[in-house]
Picture 1 (spheres, rainbow, N blue to C red):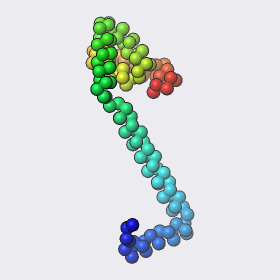
Picture 2 (tube, rainbow, N blue to C red):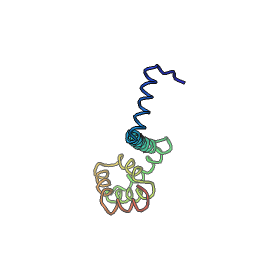
Picture 3 (cartoon, rainbow, N blue to C red):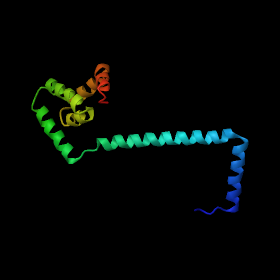
Picture 4 (tube, one colour):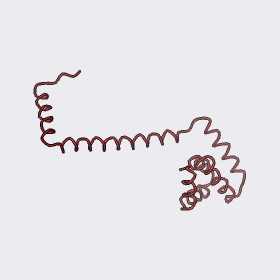
Length: 129
């Protein structure tokens, strides 16, 4: 346990007295604490998302295998169709990683398709995003 100096003890005692006199001070501290927790919670959520996006060797192999399969289609329209299906089976993040190894046109088209309201809503309805 930490030893406090006389000055620190007096300051703490004064804070307790102030809280008793004005309960709003305690409420402000509580609200501040809750706000800090909310910020920390957001940081944790962002960290978890980052962890989910990290590739392991097995996933990298699967991405490369799927990329080769889609690349063999040779038609950008067919490639885009396969990537959109993949969004619903393996998730949009996975499909984007596969598309990153294809042509820029296919990647751009995939992005444009994913941000369309109807596709976005379908992914949301199925709890994919």
